[in-house]
Image (cartoon, rainbow, N blue to C red):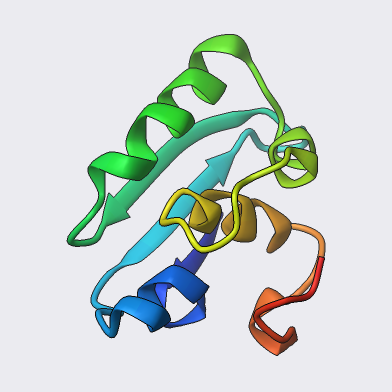
Length: 96
């Protein structure tokens, strides 16, 4: 389980509204996403992507590798998925 505060999501910074977080939960001992929680002003932008990943058995590594448009709230899901492999809070906003 990883939680990413919205002050690490470039679009939230650009909008000057960093209230909230994204939390992704993967299966124990595996990579498949089994849960998600989004508490954010634009949370609806995130939840369908997470729901589809859970329904289709998509792993956090696959989510992290997917192309997500820059400067969107949905990019937060990718950044949170990347947290399972590296600390994205230490990256600049433009790092891959």
